[in-house]
Image (cartoon, rainbow over all chains, first blue to last red):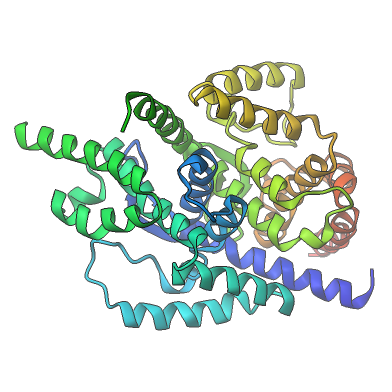
Amino acid sequence: MSESAQRRLDSQIAFLNEADKLKNTLRATELCDNSRYENSAEHSWHLTLYAMVLSDQAGPGVDIAHVIKMLILHDLVEIDAGDNPIFGDLDHAAIAVQEQAAADRIFGLLPDDLRDRFRAIWEEFEAAETPSAQFAKSLDRFQPPMQNLQAGGGSWTDFNVTEEQIATRVGAKIAIGAPTLWEYARHKISHFFAAKAGS
Amino acid sequence: MSESAQRRLDSQIAFLNEADKLKNTLRATELCDNSRYENSAEHSWHLTLYAMVLSDQAGPGVDIAHVIKMLILHDLVEIDAGDNPIFGDLDHAAIAVQEQAAADRIFGLLPDDLRDRFRAIWEEFEAAETPSAQFAKSLDRFQPPMQNLQAGGGSWTDFNVTEEQIATRVGAKIAIGAPTLWEYARHKISHFFAAKAGS
């Protein structure tokens, strides 16, 4: 193997080893069985499966293979910046600064061509302007309610969230890229809160 | 939403909820920081990232988007069948029977069209005959040594494995779909065992 091929592989593996840390980044969402908090690596895998299973919910112009790549990369910046629960008190400007610095460092471990390619995919996801990014974002918002419904409340209970807050903070975002999924979730969520109120 | 659309979504979500259990399936491999065993969901995510990062190692006829889909699905059968460590004492025929039954049950939760599509992708991976499946299999074998090198031995220590056993049981399989990755790993592994012998 040439010295440059060796150096390239060293950079690729250094990035993959660094990415391993995402398995230790905890989210506010619990597993369906309520046994523990979900980490961002397994969450990212679950989302790629959501994309495969729910591809029939994608609107015109959505490229599912590209959506999957976005979802694989979308949370890597959390290795440095941590997860920011959607129902927490968020300083969006400060988070954006932290995540940009994280992207510089983490994607910067890669050879230049891959660094630029991956950074562009992540920036596309963050900007949420293309159909593929909007669908990816909608899946990222749709999965936690599905987990919470299974877990008997999950992060809704932890953050003392109302049905209305879910509609405003989560539902509106799901509806942008996957309106039918929000319609589906809304009914389930209404049912869940009605049952809770009646119990 | 029509009743049939509702029923289809119910099946899709039932499958995605069931898939959540893969986050509780433990592997023999430890995280790079040696803090705990890896689960099969986060392992699957890590492999999809390996495919993106190491796509330049793929031979002719490999479709990376398809490889990624295989890697997303490849371990789902472990929800029922569990993980089978490569250095353990394996009854391959019994495992194959268990995994086929798991595939029947788990993919069977999906609507028929998705069940058939996903099952075909998983069977292609298992058969390891197409270039894409061979590359996917090679990545699945290449990641654990990379983790073990970081973790100071990991599953090699647990199973008291020799350098020769790694070459036979793991290396030969990596070399089928990604010969340069095995060449790369072989040097690192030799160096690791030499350092261990000298310490």
